[in-house]
Amino acid sequence: MLTFTYKQGLGGTYGDVDVYPNEKGAGRPLLVFLHGGAWRSEDKQDHTKLGQALCEQGFSVALPNYRLSLLEEGKPLVHHPAHIEDIAAALQFLHATPPVANAYDPSKMILVGHSAGAHIATMLLLDEKYNTDPYLAGIVGADGIYDLPLLLRTFPDYLDFISQAFGNDQEKYAGASPTQLPQPRPQTLDNVPVLLIHSPDDQLVDVAQTLAMRDRLVQLGVTRVVVDDVSCRGDHYAMITTPQFVRRVIQFSGECE
Image (cartoon, rainbow, N blue to C red; front, side):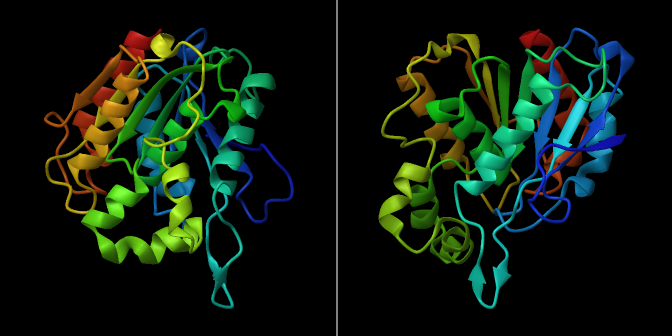
């Protein structure tokens, strides 16, 4: 594993990305795992084992950090869309200046986002201002958060971390949700397959989030969208550590080549 800085000035290790190169990855998509943590916790190093497990299957893997909405003197200094902007910068770095030669095809990246990371991944797919067209080859959302108003109707107590990351104006939450973006990207989305995984054992995020994301993608004309709410078990945090999850991601990644 090698660590690189994709953007200076973000503080700490927020602008860093860990790359797990595999020589068999030459010419293959790069798998980019985006961690969750309610936009206010977790770190790329929490997912070292997952990065290694995916890499062992013949793909190079990247795990970027991004700024978190941490409280300082009772107020968060980082708000949406900073989290997405950081990951967009990381992807541009990996695309334009591959830090490891012959480790992957820089024109093909598959984003694997868990929870809040799935929100980031799907926003990068659907919000045209991030211009991911040159390299986005696929999306995996795992126990993802995609619709903030729907999430709060189901789990009102989640307003604590949602407001910390997205501010107190709830009128803006719909526009920050990939299921409700007012102006979806005009590109033909058929070229970007999407796999939405949801564990039936997840007690923190319900399957309604995944189904809402599927319905929106279908409405936008995405023909290659699949929901898998059967094959990967485990609670919200455990599911992405299972061999079944690794196998499902690798299977999907092979289909994206």
